[in-house]
Length: 613
Ligand code: AMP
Image 1 (cartoon, rainbow, N blue to C red):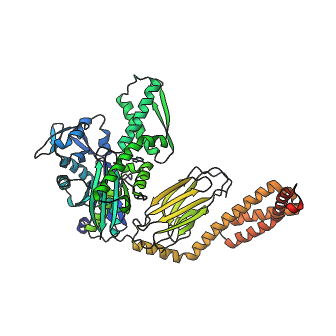
Image 2 (spheres, rainbow, N blue to C red; image 1 turned 30 degrees about the vertical axis):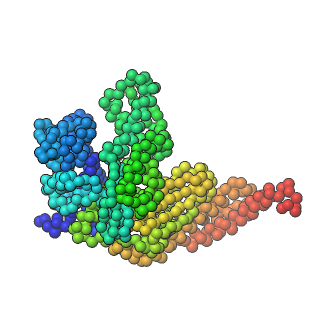
Image 3 (cartoon, rainbow, N blue to C red; image 1 turned 45 degrees about the horizontal axis):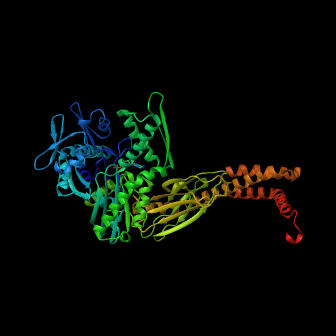
């Protein structure tokens, strides 16, 4: 029998996007994205009509190349619009758009006319079915997001699409408001928020004011024809220009090569979000291979004019709201293209504060829609208010221990810095694993994220100085940065530590840490002793190599025995035994240490007068 109560209480949060759509639901642990069996969340907002069958998503997108007139995408651009409104869009859409009733449009596929609402409903029905499969229950209600600039007729069309899909649309929510909700900014007291949304083909920025949990859109600006695709196009133009210069100006690019170039360009752009360069190889047939390495600097010189356009829109949005950059309290990043580092950098510079990027920019709107859905369904928002941080924050150190930087119950905002070093000679990368919890071992804490500091110049173990800084702001957003002080190499990550943790879960994590305090401290001590003994063993080995011959056979035998004993004891679990064996090894190595010190001293003194020494 169906559980009516469950069915009624669950409301789906849907981000119905121009390029991709996805959904999320509110759970007791916080908002959760709906994923298919393979873990995928994004459903391309594409519908294909093939042999009387309708397909949606990835499968439909695969038809776009061979079946362009029967593959419909970007329906969102048509919602609530008349044919006159759409002149610039129509030139680029490969399917047929015809005038509909009452100043609207229809899409004509294989002789059949369909309204944008009906087409959007096909996507929504698919999203609904995926969510029902994932949750194992029927879902009949939804919150759907729309851009802040959508007018009444566009909002009404979206509502109708939901109804046609068999969903009661409880609320239409502005996308920027949803993004702010996903970051818990509804709890801010009287704050101004800028939401910067750069997707594949569209850009918009909204200025919101939140007060007492109520959001007001003060202004919105944007360009419905600006996005990541423009950055791809810059790279395609660079590549085709150079290919022609290398292989002849008359060279033409058949559709398959053009498609390959587009794929390479996008992949290169994505690589350059994390790497400093990326190499493209294009096989042009007839033994012609084009190879080119593009640096991030070069890509940024192509991207900068597009990004500057978005910043001009930000300035206009602020002006419309009657505000200046200093009035903005938070900046929230939305859309896949905000992963381009220059986008965040320029936006941060303009608003004079670091933007929020901790929540996946593809998922942040759907998560916020689920938060709104949760509020409407009466699910209490039991996620945490961060006036104090409920759990300690730290990083994993050698051997799986935790180095805590911010202790539980610290008032926020707060900051902590510690310096670490390497344990291996010539180590050029350092993994930073950010953890939350009270336990002493990394495996017993909650993993919040990992990142790598690369490009550390090779140095002996212990020589690099890696300064790790934790900055927890008043909204609970944690910024972790790592900098190697000798080389200046730096890397960072942003995290929302409280995301999805309920009061009960926090309490149980704290209770666990008390219950296991003794056991945990012993485990931590054992790791420290093992690390220290490894350092001692390596130093003894080095000293034997350089000064081993100073030892008498008897001293050597004692040292070998002490080293052997320490090696055995450090494999065991007995902290005191390791500690004692460490002392014995140190004592046995004393003649060696003394000989090395004498050697250093004699080198220092050599050739100098007594009163100089
Ligand atoms: P959206 O419309 O929000 O789904 O964003 C899609 C756009 O984000 C496309 O232009 C993608 O190429 C771009 N994008 C996705 N991931 C990255 C990344 N890691 N770096 C740069 N651009 C990305």
